[in-house]
Length: 441
Image 1 (cartoon, rainbow, N blue to C red):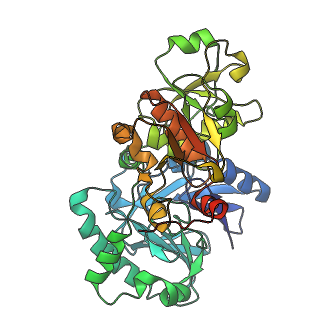
Image 2: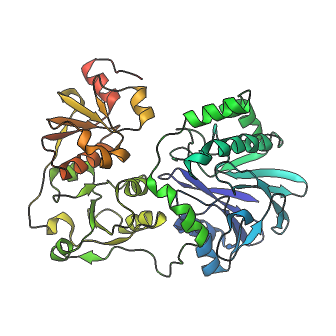
Image 3: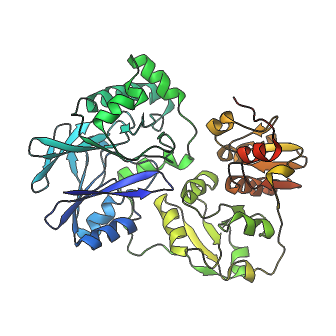
């Protein structure tokens, strides 16, 4: 038996492929972007017999139904999720014979009401547990994605679920779905897998002395999250549409682009965008986090047209959008070389050249950890609604490296802001260049 993590660095998640040693496989929490899973399965000459989902995912479209349609895979999921497509609905304690190994469903509500963890057993011996959005490495997943009035109740359920899992033997492997980089509250730079013994000894949320203390600590750790998190669970419950063709980018000539009512998203690196871009284009550089920022900054019902460099992977752009159910209707044929109308330039500056007003668009926890004195702070995800709060004066926009800052500058340009500059680098770079101290808190 081999367990292969399939890591999505951008969303901060791990799916898992379990080779059952008989030519069949189990996958857990796999997204509709099945490229990594398919490659892993084909390398081993396997067929996917089972696809288990620990919960109704908020951060990606599940690939379980796609596997059922294409390979006849049996879907395993919580009966309490009331999914509207074919699956085996499981309750707490139910077991599935995998052909030698067994999978036992453990009711672990908290991240969602219907959340299950899956304990993998060899006979009576537990080998590991797929904890989904329950017990994470050094943390527990957030409980505020259902509704504000249920957040505390779900946090109390999460407390009980973590303690139930902590009763498993020390050597049981912990295979969570959410990891570093996930907006579902995994800590940064954490390992992606662990053991029950290690989590019992080191996870801060397993060290607190009471349920009330657990709830307080968990809820105080919650940051913002992309708005698409609120709509994907229902799409996953009703059943994601089966894809009969891989998503792709349809080439569009410049006149066709001008005539369409669509969001123009420029995925080129920040330096390319700064040098010249189409007026009104939104900068979201193609990188692992592209899907998260697309879903945060673009209304979900808005069609998207992409501008990219020739060396940027069109399939990667299309799949990242598909993971969160975004409609990319095409791309500018020939890229910026084919654009023969007005372009806009955005200034880039080095850390030692920052003067005047500063807007910091990092997450709240990043800003509190250290920021330039007197910097205004508005998270990038909130800037669409709060652009009117930004001072109409020469302004330096900054984040940690420059990508989010360029997205922010492109949003501000749309609202009439001019004389903008984007810092290439972050707060630590500014401190090193100037010899000045950062403010905290």
